[in-house]
Image (cartoon, rainbow, N blue to C red; front, side):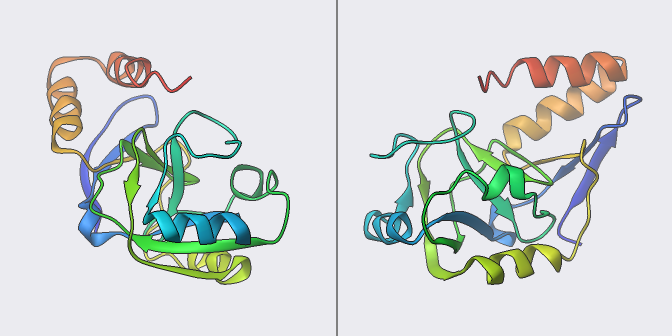
Length: 168
């Protein structure tokens, strides 16, 4: 297993840790944008085109992610494709439908493939997590959760962690 259990709380949240080196990601975008992204060699926090959703860089884990069309592709105008990549840029966190970075993401071995191929990768993930589960990659975030799980009640753990993300 690539995911390592950190702990569970009483609010149906389960926290896992994972090394970014052991994961790869799918970013759904248009064919034109995919070419621009490859030229830059990174997914940009502030790209030169309109972003959708929260103010972050988003992709989906090929280890535990799931395909949720309303999150990943319904906003795209034009021919949708999948950008498959690895990275050494640690995500802030991951959930089943997306992985979040609040910084530019360096791409390692990026490949443009069909949207269908990206969806297929997500339907065949090796590990499954529930919708409310979270995967942490940064040692500092993992330590925060471990410390909170030791000290506080479950509801306080989750509320404190989610409140401190400030993704709006």
